[in-house]
Length: 475
Ligand SMILES: *Cc1c(COP(=O)(O)O)cnc(C)c1O
Image 1 (cartoon, rainbow, N blue to C red):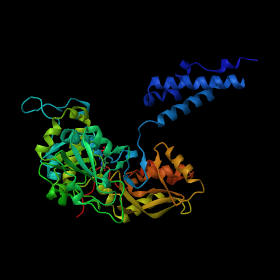
Image 2 (image 1 turned 30 degrees about the vertical axis):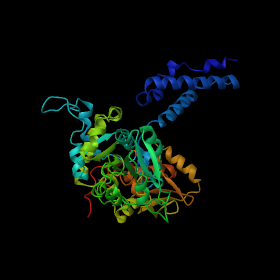
Image 3 (image 1 turned 180 degrees about the vertical axis):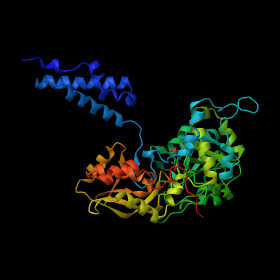
Image 4 (image 1 turned 90 degrees about the horizontal axis):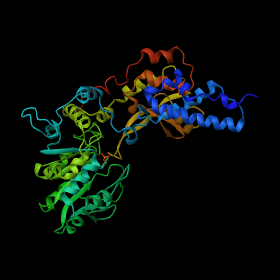
């Protein structure tokens, strides 16, 4: 009998196969050959155990599947059907595509990142950002760092090292991904002074905790939870009117909301009007920018942050700063991505849903009332009315969700009442044709004339503008 090991192909021969070569641009040639080598090892093991020779086809298929699995690890586009607009697992806010396009060239060529064109000397990295933020929030000065956590760390390190920071027990929160106020405080070298209880903190709790070592009072917006019932917490205004002038009042605002657009969220400007010295927020939540953190306030409060050595370690690069600048220009004149999703009329969502479901029997998928949320650490209690596609197959919801994640462009749904649902608010920026094609595929509907044609030429977006230029803000 022929030696079964002789049936195992060489790595080099496999790398000449077209089906394997198509992975080179997506995984690199090196990673692909690594996958081929380890797949062959498994094949060899199998041959050893069974004594059965393998076919070329079988080996190519094994390698192809292994490449596919590796490729699924890549950061890639998904369609968000969860109804959570700012989902940290899904990259928080999409960046409007015209802002992205606008910074392409300066990022792929040289830029004046730290070169002042007028004087030819070294300049600051901030471009127009502080000017735009001043218009948006009323803050005299600002700095941009890698994320809000870094902004708080910098603030505490620069203003409260070896001194005390007063924080309410009701605000010592953890926000997804291990952001814990007490830990950041201890990392900065500041000493945490806890006041009040989980549900009640009074003005006099704060005032009686003040000593000559107090540097700051830190107030944190409860962005992913809410304590209900018998609760009380003094406002920024009440506190600021009673604090000695040397003590800084810092508000971690979180979302970056700049006007009254989202119920339950206080715009940055209002905190300054109430007397906050510094306000910090994320740039990639409601503001709609890239991942960054922003600290805003009077120049005298911002200067120690700008010149602190830690700043050098947490400063963003040209990609982030140029994108943020571009997004802020749009923000000054109109709503952000999140705000525009928040205000889509239900009637429009219904039309969008009907177009997606055209020709799909109601017993298989139907439109149902639903709610969307802002998510990503803002307005935890606030839901807005939305619509969802409910899938009514017999398949176990977990299994359906998993097959939807396996689509070429993964479709991310949620389970509600034992059914898989796809919320239309967060799908709004997607094309009708693409969502349709995904549904046809996952529901095993015959890709009839409708299904296939939808992908080819009905490729208009439900929003038509949501991911491009948000519609004019209302009111
Ligand atoms: C989201 C959030 C943070 C963390 O911000 P990152 O930009 O993820 O570092 C901190 N505080 C509040 C109130 C938040 O909402």
